[in-house]
Length: 558
Image (tube, rainbow, N blue to C red; front, side, top):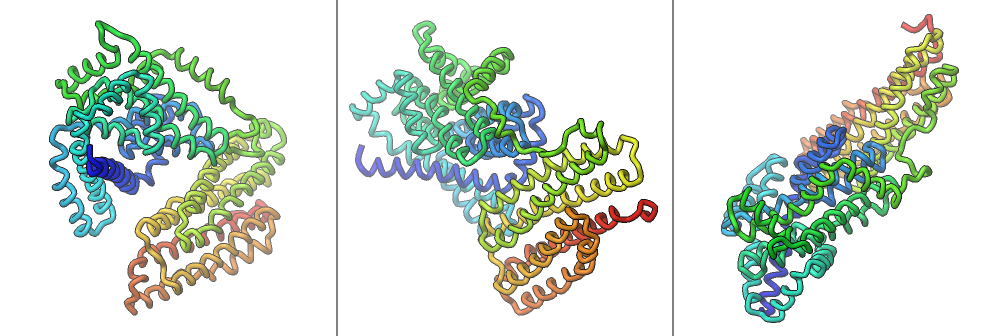
């Protein structure tokens, strides 16, 4: 094998990984904003959780990415650790989907056509969604091109004795697995290693018996990404990540046992791989067998664990002993609300509800306060931080609404009814403000980052000015709510008109008429930001109305 062949192998592997990353990035751009809500909605039962993890990972082709998102949701309390178990196992199976595409016969020959059509499509398409789809196919094409390069470069290894001796050693399961673990910890992609082994198999450079142990190790090696990503998260999120480690280790152990067990002179795992390939795909093609073997590693584990409920209970109990829940680091939740307070003194129950609402108000203030900086700096980390804060607002909202609903079922006096009703309205408005920030403004901020757009200097200053006016009103609102300050609530109403939406829209349109390109490029986003700032200001003014209602006599409230 020449130096040139080595460079081609490295380049082919790099193209393969780059193609995977391009697919991941653009598939996430198409569906990524919905992934969080999909995961939260569809993980209420174990089968649905498994299918959710499976489906999302078949899209993003990274069990690590799915598990990191899942760990973050567990860390904020939006998903329980027990819900995450099924999602993780689904993700592990979903991550084995790509090698089956790679194993399709003759797919490498289509690479130039796919690349050419996809690239020129990105130049023709206008809609961002269509451009993302074209880039997905371009990623596929690069992946296949990388496969072809790797296949061609490894052909000389078929007669290279040191390599043949090494591959004989790799047939020993423990050595093959260790090699796979080490290799994946370097390239951070088990799918890429599976693709490499398939590329080698196509040229008869590697056998099924040599490829399987390597890919078993690859599935275990992927846990390094999740562990590193979880370091900055809280303990509950770390537990979700560590479950991924244990789950992959269990899968590797089961595969290792099957590789060390023989039936009629053949290793059980190898025999099973051949049998499944023949039964499902009606072929004995070694590339397809490697893809099937890659899938069987997590699939056998899922069948055993879900098929034997007591086994899952035993594994979870063992996990709990190794990584117990820490009382001091519970998932985020309410601070003051307790159901027993509803059955006691209603005034105290209303007071703690107000305290919890004030926590939500502080979170909303914090979110809004960071928006202008997120747009100016195009800071994805800050954008993610703002969205995570909204997750906390959502958790508080659900608990507060349920708590106030329980209070409303009691026999309440006029003052208590008035407070309960207005606290409910105020909390709803706070949650709505959080949603506008998370689901509207931060979506546009991400779009600015993805498209590398920047507001004009004058436009940025105008948005900062408008942001500052709304921020001042939010500050007044939080203080007015805390102290039930009538004068401050009235002040909010008086300065409400300072947020003159039409004025700022007109300034932007004037720049458009001057043909300023940077304003033209960001026009729709700029106008939407103005609109959302005005909507938030309206909600702040509505909260001020409710604060005034609280201080009115009940008989005066319409």
